[in-house]
Image 1 (spheres, rainbow, N blue to C red):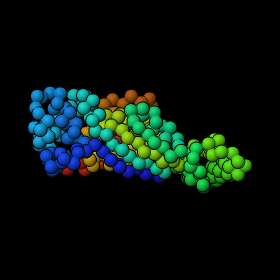
Image 2: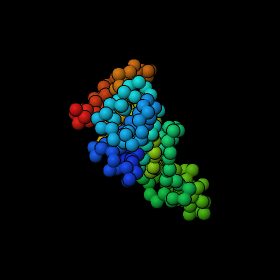
Image 3: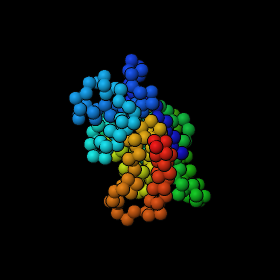
Image 4: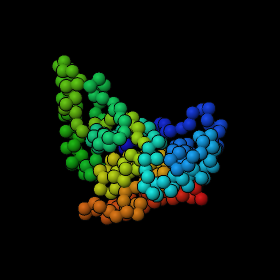
Length: 252
């Protein structure tokens, strides 16, 4: 099962923390200052002291207008592990992001450690077939290493199911785009699970921004997917709605 931890996010420098409101949600507050820079002639000193509630309203309006460049000023860094290299290939398609992945060129794979799809886990005969293929792949990898083949070449036989780890940084605008694609019921199940866990964590530190996150059907837009799996769609809409409800209650 994929695991994720929010490691860091945009914050003010220590010398400014005593100036901004104590209850400020710093990623959002930075974005609110950026927004006010565009529409007012206020000094930075004055903008640093706007009430948190006013900052949140500014973010709400800006996102509502579709001016998402403002939320690019907030960034979030995640550690992600125990997921397949299949997902890492999907993640790196999000090009407005930074990635550092555990490699197989220098890191020796010591034992079979893979993600097994639920559709295979639930079928004993196919699970046995899957496990045999995995073990053969790892056995071949070890034999190649023992024969003196470098790790960077022996790794060619390792399966896509092999678990990996990476550090990923995205700004809030790209995260909204990521959630729009990856919380959709048609997204691959493993990256959808990752997206949900990421949303749980960013809602803690920037709820005003990420209450707008989700697939089209979750944010009041028309679904553009061909032949959507309606039962799975309803399930995902319910899960995301229940998650967001906790933060809507907090903001009132």
